[in-house]
Image 1 (cartoon, rainbow, N blue to C red):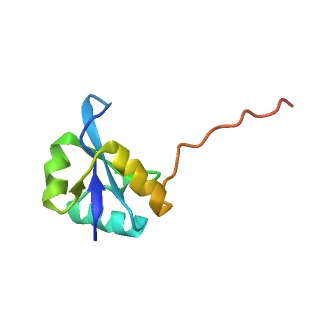
Image 2: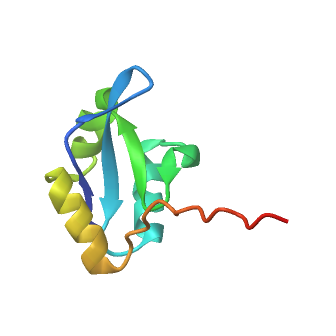
Length: 93
C-alpha cells in the first residue's frame, strides 16, 4: 500500500493543509486514512485534507512525501482525479 502526501501549503480555516492521495484506488486511500483515525468527512472528491499538525503522523504511517504537482500527476495517471464540478446555470422558465 502506497499513499502520498504533499506539503501543508494550502491555507484554509485558519490553518495549513496537505492532500493525502492514492495512485491505486479510493479503497486503499480510505483504508490508510482509517488506520490513521482520519474521519471520512475529511475526504474531498479524490483526496483527504490533512491538517499540518497531522502531516508527521501520515509520514510515520507510511505516506510518501511528494510535491503538490506530483499529487495531481499521480491522481491523473491513475484515473482517480476528480475535478471540482462546474455548475451550469439553469435556463429561465
